[in-house]
Image (cartoon, rainbow, N blue to C red; front, side):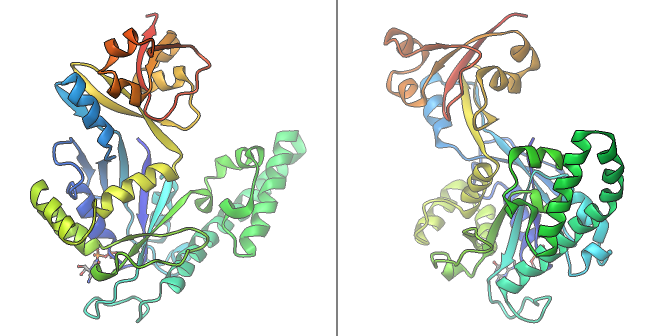
Length: 353
Ligand code: GDP
């Protein structure tokens, strides 16, 4: 499953947020989820469409899409030089698909700030610098090897060219991701797994009474405001109480629900559904995936033997009362190999075994 690393300076609320996340956090009490390791949690992606489909098909179970969160402790100034958990920390980030950076905005004087005062801009800069320095280290090590590869073939020459271009950008203080690399360039340096190529989502851990304050962009991205403290409290409540608590605060959903959805979006993901009496289930695919690739998420045999996909839009499926209703109304499409799956499609695959 796709994984998101939670990073941030010490004492910004990472563990509080992670615990709330893996404690259901008012996300959906009846969904299965799991904590695999102390610092790894599988979190369901809240999706009200599952309930709408289940109301039609009365399945034995509902299975939501999931995202994996990893609590990555140990980022301090100097990590790229081995300070704190240094290299271990960087290796852990390297394995994730995206980064979720918690930034301290809350003011509580009882919680010590590593640099003595709350300063989101400077905290973000500190982490950005460490990640950039780590990538510079990676490139410095790789370039001599790429110089040899460049003499052998064109692909090697391309790799070297892009690596040098990225190194220059990093040295000027830019993330690799913001250098505007085209697809070929990105592919050329994919093997290097640069930390600053990963998509990043900023979480502003704000005071409970500042949840509706408009925050300035951080490094070109709008941060998601959350109160880790509120989320921790919510995670302790049963769903009814959690709902009342949210309403009392004038919120329509928990911050975690929004965080998980934003993360899903950040990764360029969407869901399609399968639904019947056994289960109603959301499956995760990249935006732009074609029908066979979508089938392959269920089972590789489905992709190999793909024949067609009986497909209804989510709206038709719900309005027309399910698969039979869609068929009768001529709204059950027979889609082939080239069909680009749309978010919310309800699909039924036909395949050869
Ligand atoms: P980490 O080092 O980033 O994992 O930070 P923790 O989650 O361990 O939090 C550090 C301290 O800050 C703990 O005492 C938390 O209770 C406190 N804390 C975390 N989030 C909030 C928050 O939103 N508001 C306040 N007032 N305290 C918080």
